[in-house]
Length: 563
Image (cartoon, rainbow, N blue to C red; front, side, top):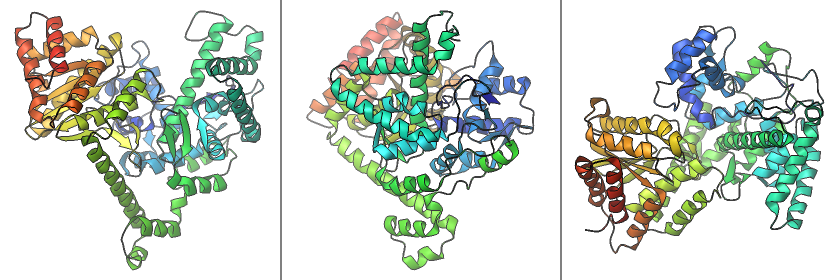
């Protein structure tokens, strides 16, 4: 049970960063620990088991494994009702559905709408001046609907202040005033935002500041400047988490460059139904049994598409099934047929995108997107890098290129999918290629990526039965990664399916490869792609060290279409 005592603003779960990442984790928990007490013993065992899984990047906190387990399970999985830890560990009805159902976005949406402060899981403060009375995701959704478009900064500065839904009109007024101020401060927006954020923090936390309670957990430094900086960082993290979780429901769009949220046009009736019917008041705040009866119920709250007449109307719109046959389908069959129809529409949109990409119609946009990523002008940098690299690989040459991404109903990237596989798969019939992208740099790049990259390549080799290689792309390649990948060229490791040919290239080199492809008077072919990896293996056998190897393969990549 968590207390809201020290909270002065809304907060959203930041672990895991995207909700679909929790699916394999709660499945692992349910398969191995159901019926056991959630104690320090099971927590340590869980994180040790989790660290061995391919979908988890990390080992947990070395000195506090039980804390790492609670960080993974006591936050989003428990708070959103996917797991029950009392009296023993169990996946709830809704948790089991989240693992097995195809309609995961719908399940997530229901659970976000039930998330509330206070609750039996988040108790009301016994001291301080902040009274919580809100369903946070519901009210942020209402705020987006009210304005049409709501920016990241507007949620961060004002949305997080809405600790009670009764403050809604006041928050609307603050956003409206902020938009007027922005016009006055043209060219000085960053300073305006920083000033407002500092004023908000100083006002919300005046009691702590006046009493000298300004030391933060992350630092021994005790100063107002550090206190404000830490709270500002927390505000960004909570807003980012709010954006990611709402986006994963499929009812909102994210403008990556505009850094804003809006309602998906086709989902407007769904959202308006939610805002009109879902009770804004928290329920059963002191009764865990009654609260969890609602929280664990996979049919609550009712959604727009739970109305059979709505389903019939949508099926008539999305499919060619005769009206007489639609009426004969059961309610669940109607839901399944609608889901399949929406998936077919999505695939058709993606197929047309692929045609346009292969015809180089999106070349300028792909190159500009890489520039925006480098300048940090997009909201979700890892997602945009992975998506844009998929588009680039699709444009680069022939082959079937598949991204390990979740797309929304309109073919727009929504989130990275759960792990244990490469980011991108390229099938060239005679051989295969995995592509891994990362924004990590320095030693963190080596710690996070080195072993998983080779493991993902080995998994792909085993599943396809083909020769396969890997292209590793990052803004800058860490020296430790270069050394590691160089050694894998030379070592015949059965666990990795023999030698692992992994070629690292930085983004600037990759962009040059794309430009060469665009300028060529012919369509590059898979053999030319393969030549880069054949050359890498050949050089690795002769090179004295990894620096010589990396220098030569970079030169080759920069001239990959030359004879």
